[in-house]
Amino acid sequence: MGLVADYRPMNITLCLTDNRPEPWMAGFRALWPEAQVTAWAPGAPQADFGVVWAPPQTFLDEQAAGLRALFNIGAGVDALLKRRLPSGVPVVRLDDAGMSVQMAEFVTHAVIRQFRELGVYQAEMAQGRWAYRKPLSRADFRVGVMGLGVLGERVAKSLQLFEFPVRGYSRSPRSVAGVDCFSGPVGGEGFNAFLQDLQVLICLLPLTAETEGILNRDSLSRLAPGGHLINVARGGHLVEEDLIPLLDSGRLGGATLDVFRTEPLPADHPFWRDPRLTLTPHTSARTLREESIAQIVGKMQALLRGQPIAGVVDPGRGY
Ligand code: NAP
Ligand code: GLV
Image (cartoon, rainbow, N blue to C red):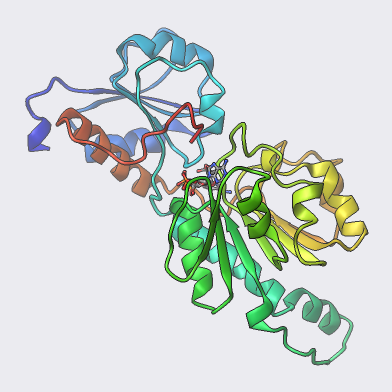
C-alpha cells in the first residue's frame, strides 16, 4: 500500500446489478483499508473508481465527471457498452481472474463428451444395453475455437492436450503453437475456411456489432454433418430460431448452450425441452470474487502510479 500512501483516500463505488454489494465491499476494504468503499445509490458522492456490472445509466451520468476508471466485474463488456459512457474514462474488463481455467474445464468436458459419445452410452446403459461403439477417429475430430483471446486461447491449448486437430479464429492474425489459426472478417474467406467440416464449434467471441448473430443457418451449415455447437460466449451470438431446424434436418447433431438471448431462459422457450441440447445457466466461467478484487485493486493502484494496465477496452471495437 506504500506506493499510494501519498494520495487522499480513494472512493471506490460499487454498482453491481443483481449482485449483493456487501461481500464485494468487505473484499475491497480488506485489501485496501485506506480506500472508502461504498455501494452506489442515487446522489452518492463522486467516485474515483466505479466497479460495475450492467449499471443503470443514472449511475454513469451522475458519476461521469470525476471517474478515473470503470471496472467491469466480468470479461464481457457488451452490457456496459450499451450505455452512454463518460468520455475519456477507461473501461477495464476482468482479465482472466480465474475464469480461463473454468472455461477450459467446461469446454473440454463438453468436447470430450461428444468425442467419447458419452450421451449415447448414457442413454444405452439407461436402457440396460451393454454395447460397444467403434471409437471415433481423433485425427478427424476437428474442433474450432472462435475467439482466441484470454479465454479462447486457453481453451484451444487445453484441447490440444487431447490431440484433437484444433483450429482458431480471430479478428486479427494470431499465432498459437499447434493451433491452425484463421482470421479476417465475419463471412470472409478465413472465416469460412475455419468453419469448414468442424466436428465441434466453440464460440468464445465478445458480443459486438460484428459478431451478433454469427452462429446462424449459413455459418452452422458449414460444419461437418451432425456437428456440435458449444456457445459459452453470449446468447446474442446465436440466431436461436435457426438452431432447431438445423437439428431437425440432421445438419447439426446437438448443442451445448450456456448463454441465451434472454436470461434466465423463459419458461416457455423450446430449448428447455429439446433432448439434443445440453443447457447450463450461464455458469461456464464464473466471476470469482476474491481473484477479481485482487486484480481490480492491483490495477487501480497501478493507474495511480501512472503505470499501464491490461484489459482496457476499446469501445470502438466493442471489446
Ligand atoms: P478477449 O480476450 O477480448 O478475446 C476476444 C477474441 O475474440 C479475440 O481473439 C478477438 O480477436 C476475437 N474477436 C473479436 N471480434 C471478432 C470478430 N469480429 N471476428 C473474429 N474474431 C473476433 O475476450 P475473452 O476474455 O476471451 O472473453 C470472450 C467472451 O467470453 C467475453 O466477451 C464474454 O462475452 C464471454 N464470457 C462468457 C462467460 C460465461 O460464463 N459464459 C464468462 C466469461 C466470458 P483479436 O485477437 O484479433 O482481437
Ligand atoms: C461472464 O459472462 C463474463 O463476461 O464475465
